[in-house]
Length: 388
Image (cartoon, rainbow, N blue to C red):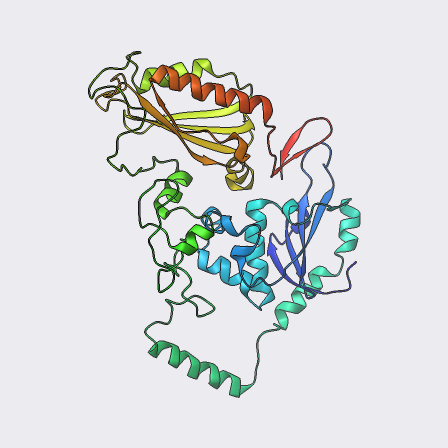
């Protein structure tokens, strides 16, 4: 049993049965995870995490994913970031719990405690009463009348301030859209919005700070998260290896539909997942998930994102799915990758049949050489999997 008192609960009041987070006054928390698979059935898994205040969340290991976390757990990015920076323990706990929901508790504590229900009840024997006591005596509320008057004066000052509500919680206009979910930084002196998006290539989409943080533009972020096509920038310059005359049919006479079928017939990826969809008739999008079928939904889809590559094949005829490329060639490019950089695909232009073989060979090699990266699914010695 802990010496520090419990002061806050996030999740179900029946936390030993349904899970939750118990926050203690010393700035630590227990994340309760009732065991569900055959090996852990009837056991309680407890991850202990530190709720440290963070001055700059972007510099933390999860910094590049904050925008995706906010969208996945459905909280404003501004609120998520402000909680991590907050001096208030309960605010920090809420933001950390959002991170736990996305990444999984094992990312914060790789050596959890496993207890029987009986021992878990002993561990938390006094917690319910401590939580009730915390509700009766909130720590951050002052009853002094002078303090109340000061708060009222402050509210009046805030109402008179036209910028109040448009600022970040720490009074810094760090974000281009402080009240929204975009992670992009505000443009200003020393940080102009003059950088292209690394995904779609459109100019003047990012600030220099966005580039340092490894961001892409909001449109690309939304498109990837929602499974929509990316609007790529066309610079009007001909491809270096484009030799065919305009309107010359492909040697293979292959449109986007036959191309997708040809590509699938060449794949030898075992139980890995692949999804092909068309953006109109002239573009094919291929999502490759380096996970077995049926795995990837854990962490709100975060596990799939941690094993995903997306490829774009463009240049087919737009009249129908059987219309051949006007130039006789199509281009394949890697758009997104969470796999090791050594497995990035180099962009290539060629006939549809050549590109189908080129892309299939690449995916077949990955399936052979790159094991799945289980970030949210537990693997027990028998090989059984469960979402954590």
